[in-house]
Length: 375
Image (cartoon, rainbow, N blue to C red; front, side):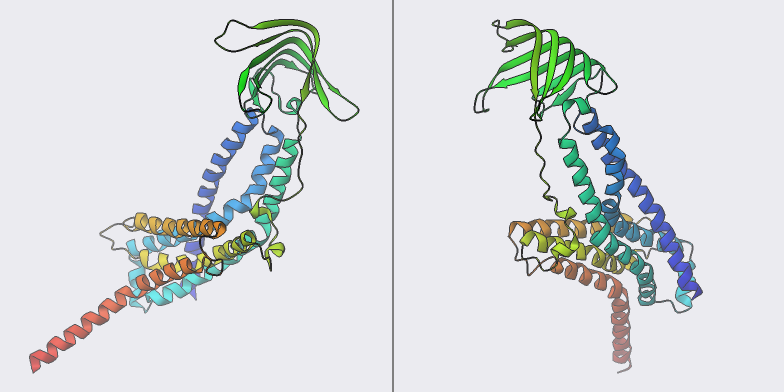
């Protein structure tokens, strides 16, 4: 029992450290992406922390299996390097018993991953989608940052203001450059540049919003041509686009698990299989990690780390590839993701029993040679 607690503690502590490091790295990369969207005026900066908080369960459901895999490799690898595993082996600790002990922390991780995939991640993804839908309802006034050029309408419009009031209704030093297209929107017909000393937002009774520019100029023309038309105005109205927001959930990850159960839609069935696959993945990687953690002290504890990571990435990549094929209908949904788990389960069993089988074969060969020599 003491050995069991010791091994479990070593695996869980190492897994926690690795998972925390991976979570910080992944969250930093995603935060930079969202921050870039905020600087472009696509997202409201005040919503960034909420989006990141609701994304954490989705990150953890992918990080925890990898953290457990690396935790077993690093923890048991250290025990082999310090000859602690040699002492345990001398007292009767076989690879099979070590694997059985490793299933205990794996069960905790699998239950946590199942809780994340079935409950927290869909709720978090739903909240993120709701926040992003709310961002679509924001006008350019809600995302403008004074003193910065910002792209709007998928880079069709560039807006710049020098000053912006606290209630975001009054602008000063306005510059707007917008591409003009043909009636069907297929062909570009030049650009329109608006400059004004000030501007304000005006809401009509029907809910439409206008940007009223005051005391400025309008330039219409085509870059490279000399046929620009300059118009001076005292007041000029620019219609701000209305965003239509759909309440329908479009992200499969945001669909509650209860809606996936019994659904006849292919995408829902594949999503349910994916959510069930992640907890199952945890147990399969234990069979892979335990034999791969066995190293010779003379070879170094990191000798098998890189091949092991490649094996894990192959496992996960194949799952993702098969999921894509299932969604596109290239593979029957009845087949599902289970053959991938079966393949790597077989690889894990081969790795686990390969050395005992080799020892048995050598013992049988030696017995035969002795018997032939005596004959």
